Amino acid sequence: MKRLVVTADDFGLSLTVNEAVEQAHREGILTAASLMVSAPAAADAVARARRLPSLRVGLHLVMVEAWPTLPAADLPALTGSDGLIRSDMGRLGLDLALKPSARRQLAAEITAQFEAYRATGLPLDHVNAHKHFHVHPLIAGAVLAIGRRYGMRAIRVPREPRAVLRAAEAEAAPKPALDIAPWAALLAVRARQAGLLIPDRTLGLAWSGAMTPERVAGLLAHLPDGLTELYTHPATGGGFPGEAPGYAYAAERDALIAPATLAAARASGAVRGGFSDFLA
Image (cartoon, rainbow, N blue to C red):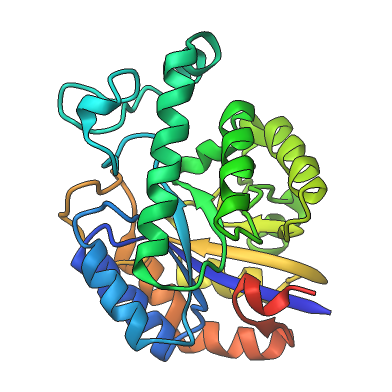
Protein backbone atom coordinates (compact mmCIF):
# COMPACT_ATOMS: atom_id res chain seq x y z
CA MET A 1 0.00 0.00 0.00
CA LYS A 2 1.16 3.51 -0.77
CA ARG A 3 1.11 5.90 2.17
CA LEU A 4 2.15 9.52 1.82
CA VAL A 5 3.01 12.30 4.24
CA VAL A 6 3.44 15.70 2.55
CA THR A 7 5.31 18.01 4.90
CA ALA A 8 6.21 21.70 4.97
CA ASP A 9 9.36 22.55 6.89
CA ASP A 10 10.07 25.84 8.69
CA PHE A 11 6.49 26.44 9.86
CA GLY A 12 6.72 29.61 11.93
CA LEU A 13 9.70 31.08 10.09
CA SER A 14 7.63 33.92 8.60
CA LEU A 15 4.04 34.98 7.95
CA THR A 16 4.55 34.14 4.27
CA VAL A 17 5.57 30.59 5.16
CA ASN A 18 2.57 30.24 7.46
CA GLU A 19 0.20 31.58 4.81
CA ALA A 20 1.51 29.06 2.30
CA VAL A 21 1.17 26.19 4.77
CA GLU A 22 -2.45 27.05 5.45
CA GLN A 23 -3.26 27.50 1.76
CA ALA A 24 -1.50 24.28 0.74
CA HIS A 25 -3.37 22.32 3.39
CA ARG A 26 -6.76 23.80 2.61
CA GLU A 27 -6.44 23.73 -1.17
CA GLY A 28 -3.68 21.24 -1.93
CA ILE A 29 -1.95 18.05 -0.88
CA LEU A 30 -0.11 19.26 2.23
CA THR A 31 -0.86 17.06 5.24
CA ALA A 32 1.77 18.06 7.82
CA ALA A 33 4.02 20.91 8.91
CA SER A 34 7.12 21.08 11.09
CA LEU A 35 7.16 23.93 13.61
CA MET A 36 10.20 26.01 14.54
CA VAL A 37 9.10 26.88 18.06
CA SER A 38 11.28 29.99 18.50
CA ALA A 39 11.15 31.44 14.99
CA PRO A 40 9.71 34.95 14.49
CA ALA A 41 6.23 33.82 13.36
CA ALA A 42 5.87 30.77 15.61
CA ALA A 43 2.90 32.19 17.52
CA ASP A 44 1.04 32.83 14.28
CA ALA A 45 1.83 29.30 13.11
CA VAL A 46 0.41 27.82 16.31
CA ALA A 47 -2.76 29.90 15.96
CA ARG A 48 -3.22 28.68 12.39
CA ALA A 49 -2.58 25.08 13.41
CA ARG A 50 -5.29 25.33 16.04
CA ARG A 51 -7.71 26.44 13.32
CA LEU A 52 -6.65 23.50 11.15
CA PRO A 53 -7.18 20.37 13.25
CA SER A 54 -6.60 18.13 10.23
CA LEU A 55 -3.08 19.55 9.75
CA ARG A 56 -0.59 17.28 11.50
CA VAL A 57 2.12 19.32 13.19
CA GLY A 58 5.52 18.21 14.43
CA LEU A 59 8.66 19.73 15.89
CA HIS A 60 11.35 21.10 13.57
CA LEU A 61 14.31 21.09 15.93
CA VAL A 62 16.75 23.95 15.41
CA MET A 63 20.36 23.10 16.19
CA VAL A 64 22.06 25.17 13.51
CA GLU A 65 21.70 28.63 11.93
CA ALA A 66 18.52 29.90 13.59
CA TRP A 67 16.94 31.08 16.81
CA PRO A 68 17.55 29.15 20.03
CA THR A 69 14.81 28.72 22.61
CA LEU A 70 17.10 29.22 25.60
CA PRO A 71 18.93 32.54 26.05
CA ALA A 72 22.08 32.68 23.97
CA ALA A 73 24.04 33.42 27.15
CA ASP A 74 23.17 29.92 28.34
CA LEU A 75 24.55 28.39 25.14
CA PRO A 76 28.03 29.88 24.67
CA ALA A 77 29.32 26.79 22.86
CA LEU A 78 26.39 26.72 20.43
CA THR A 79 25.65 30.36 19.60
CA GLY A 80 27.49 33.18 17.88
CA SER A 81 27.79 36.89 18.57
CA ASP A 82 24.48 37.48 16.77
CA GLY A 83 22.61 35.38 19.33
CA LEU A 84 21.74 32.70 16.77
CA ILE A 85 22.83 29.10 16.81
CA ARG A 86 26.05 28.75 14.84
CA SER A 87 25.99 28.05 11.11
CA ASP A 88 29.34 26.21 10.88
CA MET A 89 27.85 22.72 11.01
CA GLY A 90 31.13 20.88 10.56
CA ARG A 91 32.92 22.70 13.35
CA LEU A 92 29.85 22.58 15.59
CA GLY A 93 29.63 18.82 15.10
CA LEU A 94 33.28 18.47 16.05
CA ASP A 95 32.80 20.63 19.15
CA LEU A 96 29.94 18.38 20.23
CA ALA A 97 32.26 15.39 19.95
CA LEU A 98 35.11 17.03 21.86
CA LYS A 99 33.41 19.21 24.47
CA PRO A 100 31.15 17.83 27.22
CA SER A 101 29.93 21.37 27.90
CA ALA A 102 28.70 21.65 24.31
CA ARG A 103 26.81 18.36 24.65
CA ARG A 104 25.20 19.52 27.89
CA GLN A 105 24.11 22.77 26.27
CA LEU A 106 22.74 20.88 23.28
CA ALA A 107 20.68 18.60 25.51
CA ALA A 108 19.33 21.61 27.39
CA GLU A 109 18.35 23.36 24.16
CA ILE A 110 16.69 20.27 22.69
CA THR A 111 14.74 19.83 25.93
CA ALA A 112 13.69 23.49 25.84
CA GLN A 113 12.37 23.11 22.29
CA PHE A 114 10.37 20.01 23.22
CA GLU A 115 9.01 21.89 26.24
CA ALA A 116 8.04 24.86 24.07
CA TYR A 117 6.26 22.55 21.66
CA ARG A 118 4.39 20.83 24.49
CA ALA A 119 3.30 24.26 25.75
CA THR A 120 1.46 24.86 22.46
CA GLY A 121 -0.96 22.05 23.30
CA LEU A 122 -0.65 20.68 19.76
CA PRO A 123 -0.33 16.90 19.35
CA LEU A 124 3.22 15.91 18.38
CA ASP A 125 2.95 14.21 14.99
CA HIS A 126 6.66 13.87 14.23
CA VAL A 127 10.14 15.26 14.82
CA ASN A 128 12.82 16.34 12.37
CA ALA A 129 15.58 18.95 12.33
CA HIS A 130 16.65 22.06 10.47
CA LYS A 131 19.12 21.03 7.75
CA HIS A 132 18.70 17.39 8.90
CA PHE A 133 21.29 17.95 11.65
CA HIS A 134 19.65 15.20 13.70
CA VAL A 135 21.55 12.63 11.59
CA HIS A 136 24.72 13.57 13.50
CA PRO A 137 25.17 10.54 15.78
CA LEU A 138 25.59 12.56 18.99
CA ILE A 139 22.61 14.77 18.17
CA ALA A 140 20.56 11.73 17.20
CA GLY A 141 21.28 10.14 20.56
CA ALA A 142 20.14 13.24 22.40
CA VAL A 143 16.98 13.61 20.30
CA LEU A 144 16.03 9.95 20.75
CA ALA A 145 16.59 10.05 24.51
CA ILE A 146 14.87 13.38 25.13
CA GLY A 147 12.10 12.87 22.60
CA ARG A 148 10.99 9.69 24.35
CA ARG A 149 10.06 11.77 27.39
CA TYR A 150 7.81 13.99 25.27
CA GLY A 151 5.92 11.30 23.40
CA MET A 152 7.89 11.35 20.15
CA ARG A 153 6.57 8.54 17.96
CA ALA A 154 7.91 9.34 14.48
CA ILE A 155 11.10 10.86 13.11
CA ARG A 156 12.35 11.79 9.65
CA VAL A 157 15.16 9.72 8.19
CA PRO A 158 16.53 11.65 5.16
CA ARG A 159 17.14 8.90 2.58
CA GLU A 160 16.15 9.49 -1.04
CA PRO A 161 16.40 6.82 -3.76
CA ARG A 162 17.89 8.06 -7.00
CA ALA A 163 15.67 5.71 -9.04
CA VAL A 164 12.54 7.62 -8.05
CA LEU A 165 14.18 10.93 -8.99
CA ARG A 166 15.22 9.64 -12.40
CA ALA A 167 11.73 8.28 -13.03
CA ALA A 168 10.23 11.65 -12.14
CA GLU A 169 12.60 13.67 -14.32
CA ALA A 170 14.42 11.42 -16.77
CA GLU A 171 16.53 14.21 -18.29
CA ALA A 172 17.96 15.28 -14.94
CA ALA A 173 20.73 13.65 -12.95
CA PRO A 174 19.94 14.80 -9.43
CA LYS A 175 22.54 14.16 -6.81
CA PRO A 176 21.21 12.33 -3.77
CA ALA A 177 22.35 13.40 -0.33
CA LEU A 178 25.25 10.95 -0.24
CA ASP A 179 27.13 13.01 2.32
CA ILE A 180 24.60 12.15 5.03
CA ALA A 181 23.64 8.68 3.76
CA PRO A 182 25.75 6.66 6.26
CA TRP A 183 24.46 8.70 9.19
CA ALA A 184 20.88 8.44 7.93
CA ALA A 185 21.23 4.67 7.73
CA LEU A 186 22.47 4.62 11.32
CA LEU A 187 19.62 6.85 12.41
CA ALA A 188 17.14 4.46 10.77
CA VAL A 189 18.51 1.54 12.80
CA ARG A 190 18.45 3.49 16.06
CA ALA A 191 14.97 4.87 15.43
CA ARG A 192 13.56 1.41 14.70
CA GLN A 193 15.21 0.06 17.85
CA ALA A 194 13.46 2.86 19.76
CA GLY A 195 10.12 1.78 18.29
CA LEU A 196 9.66 4.92 16.20
CA LEU A 197 7.86 5.18 12.89
CA ILE A 198 10.17 6.27 10.07
CA PRO A 199 9.50 6.82 6.36
CA ASP A 200 10.79 4.25 3.90
CA ARG A 201 12.08 7.18 1.85
CA THR A 202 12.11 10.99 2.03
CA LEU A 203 11.64 12.93 -1.19
CA GLY A 204 12.81 16.53 -1.45
CA LEU A 205 16.51 16.25 -0.62
CA ALA A 206 18.15 16.56 -4.04
CA TRP A 207 15.67 19.22 -5.14
CA SER A 208 15.44 21.07 -1.83
CA GLY A 209 14.19 24.58 -2.57
CA ALA A 210 13.38 23.58 -6.14
CA MET A 211 10.37 21.28 -5.78
CA THR A 212 8.55 22.67 -8.80
CA PRO A 213 5.00 21.67 -9.76
CA GLU A 214 6.39 19.47 -12.54
CA ARG A 215 8.78 17.67 -10.20
CA VAL A 216 6.21 17.07 -7.50
CA ALA A 217 3.71 15.73 -10.04
CA GLY A 218 6.45 13.49 -11.45
CA LEU A 219 7.38 12.13 -8.03
CA LEU A 220 3.74 11.41 -7.24
CA ALA A 221 3.36 9.58 -10.55
CA HIS A 222 6.21 7.23 -9.61
CA LEU A 223 5.49 6.80 -5.92
CA PRO A 224 6.70 3.42 -4.62
CA ASP A 225 4.79 1.27 -2.16
CA GLY A 226 5.36 1.87 1.53
CA LEU A 227 5.52 5.07 3.57
CA THR A 228 6.92 8.09 1.73
CA GLU A 229 7.53 11.54 3.14
CA LEU A 230 7.62 14.31 0.54
CA TYR A 231 8.86 17.50 2.15
CA THR A 232 8.83 21.06 0.84
CA HIS A 233 9.58 24.68 1.78
CA PRO A 234 6.52 26.68 0.68
CA ALA A 235 5.96 30.39 1.16
CA THR A 236 3.83 33.00 -0.57
CA GLY A 237 6.91 35.17 -1.06
CA GLY A 238 10.50 35.71 0.04
CA GLY A 239 12.43 38.46 1.75
CA PHE A 240 12.16 37.22 5.34
CA PRO A 241 14.81 36.57 8.02
CA GLY A 242 16.23 33.08 7.73
CA GLU A 243 15.42 32.81 4.02
CA ALA A 244 17.62 30.27 2.23
CA PRO A 245 19.42 31.79 -0.77
CA GLY A 246 18.12 30.54 -4.08
CA TYR A 247 15.06 28.75 -2.72
CA ALA A 248 11.97 29.03 -4.94
CA TYR A 249 9.52 29.29 -2.07
CA ALA A 250 6.51 30.42 -4.10
CA ALA A 251 7.11 27.70 -6.69
CA GLU A 252 7.11 25.10 -3.93
CA ARG A 253 3.80 26.51 -2.66
CA ASP A 254 2.46 26.30 -6.21
CA ALA A 255 3.65 22.69 -6.44
CA LEU A 256 1.38 21.76 -3.54
CA ILE A 257 -1.79 23.27 -4.99
CA ALA A 258 -1.35 22.88 -8.77
CA PRO A 259 -4.15 21.00 -10.59
CA ALA A 260 -1.58 18.57 -12.02
CA THR A 261 -0.37 17.82 -8.50
CA LEU A 262 -3.88 17.17 -7.23
CA ALA A 263 -4.53 14.88 -10.19
CA ALA A 264 -1.26 13.00 -9.69
CA ALA A 265 -1.98 12.53 -5.99
CA ARG A 266 -5.38 11.05 -6.79
CA ALA A 267 -3.99 8.83 -9.54
CA SER A 268 -1.23 7.50 -7.26
CA GLY A 269 -3.79 5.82 -5.04
CA ALA A 270 -1.74 6.81 -2.00
CA VAL A 271 -3.42 7.27 1.36
CA ARG A 272 -2.38 10.68 2.67
CA GLY A 273 -2.03 11.82 6.25
CA GLY A 274 0.43 12.66 8.97
CA PHE A 275 2.80 10.20 10.59
CA SER A 276 0.37 9.76 13.46
CA ASP A 277 -2.26 8.55 11.01
CA PHE A 278 -0.04 5.61 10.05
CA LEU A 279 1.01 4.42 13.47
CA ALA A 280 0.14 0.77 14.10
